[in-house]
Image (cartoon, rainbow, N blue to C red; front, side, top):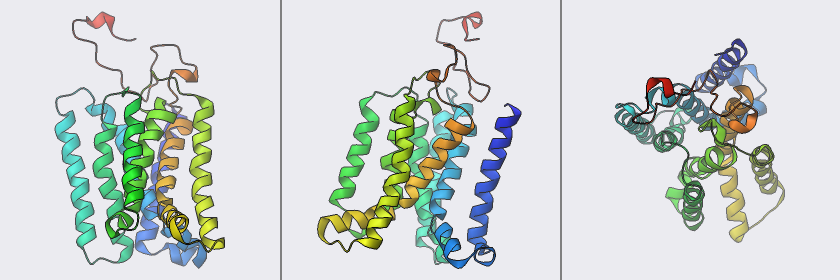
Length: 270
């Protein structure tokens, strides 16, 4: 890894870990104004899930890809994350710890999805996101769906993020559109801000009010996805073949794929 990208990685991971530790320890309330500390603290699930997903994409996914232990390890990690999430949910820990259950429950599903071989069929991520969105809308007033807002938000946004708008993160041979990518980033910033403004300024009832309140609950999902995308695409330069690299050339941060069956070692991608 190039020194600049290594420094970016250290800054990203250490920074996220420090923020999470400050939230969980209660230190944040002592060093920042109360209102600002609260605004940061309520996004702890987003920060935690962003850390988990980035670690998996950068370090675990490429090392497991194509190996015999790929799916045993992936499924074991997914089960472990889901178990941690359920234990947190059933615990009587302080709310700042217990609230992280949604981050681990989401990670239990997402690491499995991330490990799938790319490219996926173009319709699959759109169908998955649309299906989960439909379930969320139909059950928005139920206690289960309301309680899983952050988890469902990530499950809706992630397939679109990594397999429609920013495909170069997981598939170095993809040719994503820069205009679509930055439009997606704008969407991830504008939508949660809009929901927050509407909740504070509009006394809405009915379906519109339900959507607004649920959108605010999904705020951390937008933060999580945006952090991961910006880190890999802007920080590490994973933009796919559309970024200007010659066809077949892989960056130092990406694992080369195994040769196809029947090809000699001399036929591997150089």
